[in-house]
Amino acid sequence: MARHKVIGVDKVGPGEMIGLSIEGRELLVANVEGKLFAIDGRCSRRCGRLWKGRLNGYFVECPNHGATFDIRDGRAVSSAKSPRTGKAKDLRAYEVIIDDDGVFVAL
Ligand code: FES
Image (cartoon, rainbow, N blue to C red):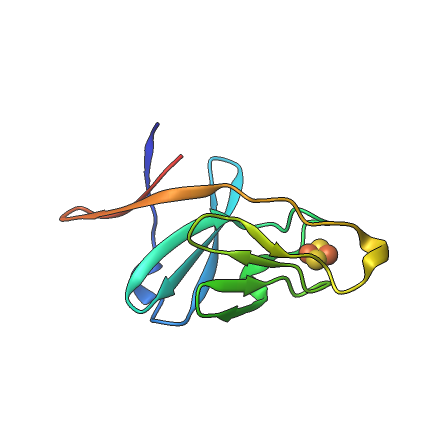
């Protein structure tokens, strides 16, 4: 597993999130009460940009159709608001490492 330094995360305050592209993957990094979490940045349904959604505690809601994911482990906790659009699948969660050299995500 390789560590990738993430730039700009120091500007993400509590209750905020950003989208990052690392090694061709889009990630969501969120700050909840001073702790950073990283999961896949695209919704497992139709690729909604989760960092443009709403963060409510440990849960991020997709801006497209409302599927909700737990940012601690990437688990889909609710599907889209329309039953026609199908179920959301769990996303990958990534370890966030903070040391004297900065903030890293392990991919
Ligand atoms: S794209 Fe995320 S709920 Fe539809």
